[in-house]
Image (cartoon, rainbow, N blue to C red; front, side, top):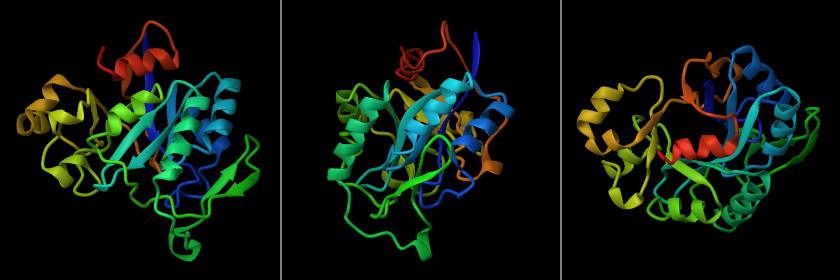
Length: 237
């Protein structure tokens, strides 16, 4: 069956995410747009995934816990996990490898943790958008050690992408999937970077605001609607 997805979006936990990106608003808008599968991928944190997953279960929406990791090369990588427990373990690992720099809310905005009723239950003090000391060359094997799947985000962008930073997608990274944002020309990218011809290409919204979320358009053909099925698809199995 066809299941419509958006595997890259941010909540009010991301410093660049709008405060309207609350768990209820994210799930409600996803349903209105006709999505079947979403992943919450805040910058270097998974701490709003629990609330969104709880709401997804109540609203027949598959929610995958995830994170948009910033590597030491300042490359964004979408990391997705089979369970909240594995995502939280990864969160603890990443926290140990982050720069300890206090967030300036007057510059970057707040980094708010919410429950499933959109109540504020905490706030992350250290700025989440900074690079970690995790290399893009190691991230795939590290994420897999937490049973997860990862892929380079918005590879066609001029900043924070693997191509803008490294000039290509090194085979040594081992990625089997890559994300192209809506403005990217997939055929042109495949001609310029032949490695993409052997990779699954996904399109996600990278929404930081409710109005950035996209109508259901991109889909996977899956035998069943489970996180395991989605992760297997992303592994290009």
